[in-house]
Image (cartoon, rainbow, N blue to C red; front, side):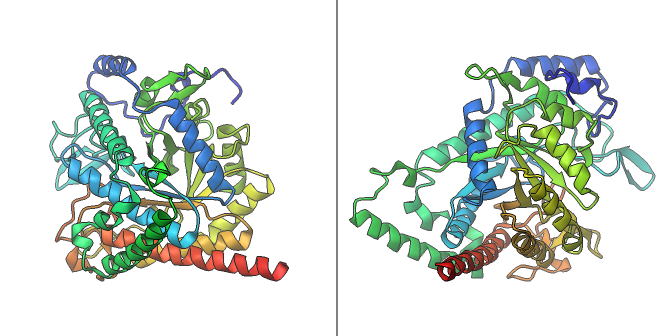
Length: 462
């Protein structure tokens, strides 16, 4: 890994997984990538450095990471209301986690670039017809036709435009007053109102409002403390299409370092984490905070080698590790990985992705995820981290602010028969707003137990 790095050095690797090579016109693809090189950055190096600093706090147990959003963004569902609903769901969850956990919450959306998806099979077959698999709206279309499934480089430009517009709106929401804590009562999603989680959130809102009233009485207001009026919000996606990421890689004028300006944080998925592969090669040269998915086949030695390649300076906040084992495998796989990074002194954030290891196909053919398995994996993660002396740094969720019926269970006990009602995902099943908020409350309770327990231990020690 010591050879000279450039944004294009990944192209020299023999192992290049899940990067399409079947564009009908490769010259057209190159032309689009050249166009992207001249487009403005979507994010700035200073923002990425700020997120790295906050993730450094997470690695030390001083903050908690909440990362969530769509499984895959789509062109069809691109709408200001959907962006707003996702943003306020994350705000709601962050408030719940902050209030109970007693720590700042670092808010990162799977937004403004989460288009491409790796697929287990390159083809899909319906009846006697076999076509290329759908790989995300920035590559091809969902419709099961030869024309739709043909990779089209113009989709990269559309994805760039949608990401730019999404970021513009997110920045307006984050800094323009919508995120003001005094608006906490207005953040409830319509379909969550009157639900068990809506009622719990209303109670929490009243407590926070009382606290704000007291703070205002002693002179702490949004005017005197602007942080009450705005939030820091960051974006992330799986950097699968390396040609796009290469085109968005720029030299920071203040530091001379290379940054991927397509998102604040990008991660390597379970299927593309080969040590000698193209994705690790690309990631090792950018200075953004980066993530790595760790599934049930990850061995401790492999993880340490990857950590050395991706974070050779052992910089706090640079590397986030996302466990994604499944509720039935986490107890057998996570402890050894935690011990390895702790023993090696790796300054990493450990977070849990409880979605990908808990996917199943229902009897009626719908891909789904049981809420109880998702919750079980999150609880196990917190407990195992505590037992191993490692900070449980955060959660990474596929979710939506829309009223969908894609994951089983939750407070409303969605059944397999309910899945067909509002199953809208373009790829994998997502938690709806009510289920996501329920999970936030349950995680918050777990964090509160640990906080109270740690405080009691300190008191005994004194």
